[in-house]
Image: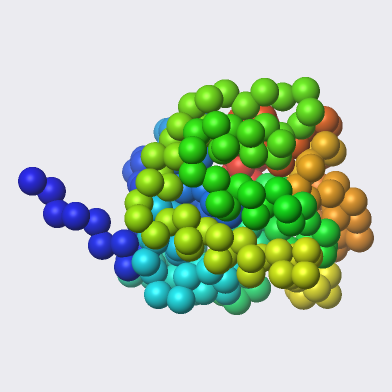
Length: 257
């Protein structure tokens, strides 16, 4: 019988053995499995780590879990423990904010940053939807939230909601997500990484955002630092890994080259 997972430690699903290292960071309320369409595609020539962020799924009881800053420190510490000195960081939503913080705090560790619908690029956020998503436990509740997070003409398959419901079944997960959601959306706004700080990032950075994102408005791509590349996904919503998996793989591969 296998040993039970220690959920006070940071968990990562690892695929591939290639020389390049790609780190995948999911958004709030997700888990490593949200990359199930993406990770195998990237693992043919790279080592790909998909993390459960602190406070999520197999990392549920990581100490002081909740903030992007804690997550950034945890990921850097785990990579150091694994002997990984440099990696290509990919983050979606909250994971995008975490990837940006990693680039700011440890630029020597980040070869590139790929930020998919990243959090922290402006104060506006769909706070009500995010709080409902954090509290959702049943498949039908999650399905409704995922559809609302997607573009109006996209219908989310049932499988992502089923996998999320399974990941949230651990006792204590709902309470933790409700707590994190309240912190993220305090005052119905999100925390913002100042543009002048982002402008100090010297590694290649790509920001990808759908023009129909109902969680984080596309207008947050305005006034990006001149060295950032913007990849516009017309008509796409917030759930880019499900809505546009081929585009996501393309963008990550371009950066990892």
